[in-house]
Image 1 (tube, rainbow, N blue to C red):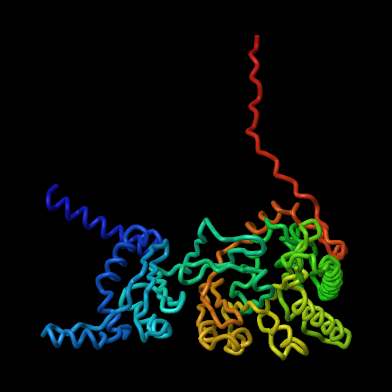
Image 2 (cartoon, rainbow, N blue to C red):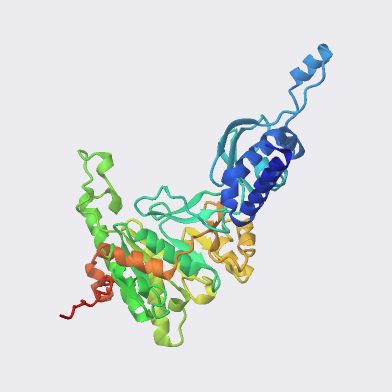
Length: 456
């Protein structure tokens, strides 16, 4: 091959790599980025660790030995690399810390490591005592969300969004039974809620919707719902029926406990998941689309209804987990200005998600008791990336995520396909949506040509 042809080939490869990096960053990472990133990390590792202050001085005995043998003094020691793993979104380094180092030092240096290694983002977390893990993202995984095909979804555990470090954020209702989702208009709350409905639709679970915007968000998905309320009066009836169902389930659990000396400990339960399968009631997930429509009132009658609604929600949030009733509440703001008991309700919602908010106060309502950094991150979400959110819980951890875009047509098709899985709950029979059966579209046949006759 001549020099000119080789130069043209090299130019074409470089041009193709630049186009991939601009148009398809995921493809660029899998084809070129992984190699370049590994070389940068391995070649620069010791120098970067020293520049970021993540090294420790050599031990005294080595310095003494160097002086006695008149050799060059050893340099500072960097953390030892235990494991390097490549993923479809970045790199993972598992490091053994040197004596005297702390995991907080690595967390504080993530931004400097990102610049030094030429990565898009670096996140640090402690695995166990003396071991930290650096997750490096090679490109902006939230710009075009692509959920992995293989997920760890299970019963009441669904893939809700993609984290900015490339990992999947799961919504596990059995671990975090109740959640709050706040965000401004057009921030992506409804799309995220729609995605959760489509993920729960194939499971053996009852879905209950409360959408006081005349049902414009949840009514198209009604075939998969066991109950749907589109006004405040029906919402109160649904919530009171759920409270009655919760009380009845507690009676079943109490009857089946049979605590005595001859019953094994593993068969004693205080929730529905320890009941025999034939007695276990179907779990219920309640979606509240806009909480403020339930909490606002304009008259004395509305105020009485509002107090009853909030009281029922508080009871479900406090006691519903053991009975298999889980809450997913969405709102633009959930503050004390909405009335009595709202703060009590918010305190029971362990999972917190904040989409783009218009003011810091709204972010404080979700994350003030979790992390000040999460509050700041929620106020910095750009308006041109709907669905991007900050997810946290009361343990103090938080992450930036983005849910995949789920169109209304896609959600309707999924809910219609799984409409036969919507269980009929006797307590909610009066609120079950009545809709005509789904009629499959008629197949389109090619037109039959007219018969040709020959004249005699």
